[in-house]
Length: 80
Image (tube, rainbow, N blue to C red; front, side):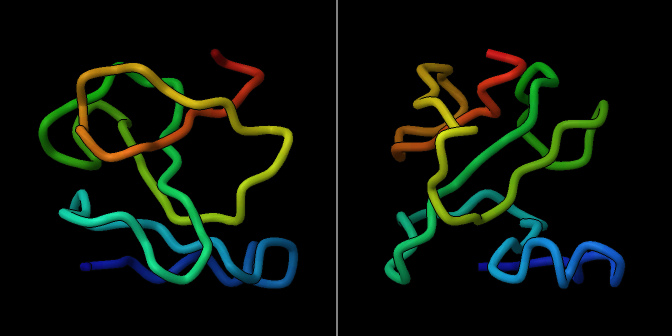
């Protein structure tokens, strides 16, 4: 799974969050979930502002039903 380095100012606040450089083919095995932002899903991460990351499941996440991935994934609740 390809990941991008997270900005240093976010590392302390979100220590298990990890931005993705490509969409994973399998669900994470370390207890984290795939989350993406509110931007219309794109085939390529980063296009038109579409971002995805791995994070611990929280009340801020809601299960997403978009067709971007067949894997179980989530969106931010405030934008759902």
